[in-house]
Length: 56
Image 1 (spheres, rainbow, N blue to C red):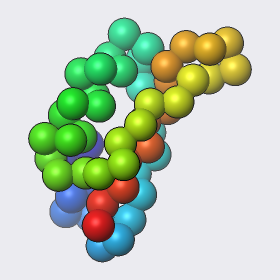
Image 2 (cartoon, rainbow, N blue to C red; image 1 turned 135 degrees about the horizontal axis):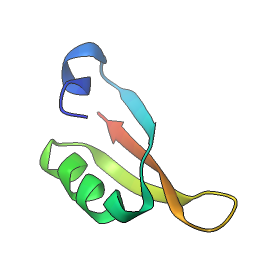
Image 3 (cartoon, one colour; image 1 turned 90 degrees about the horizontal axis):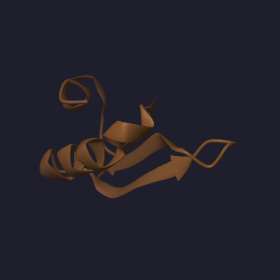
């Protein structure tokens, strides 16, 4: 996540699969890095699995 700031242009969106137990930590980390519209979306079984973060 941290390195994505260097290999993406602006604007961009980062989408990544995460472990459900990491959802809150990864969401907060993305916000600290300056991403906006950060959300964690559930997989088909309802577990938080996909992080979507926008970079403006």
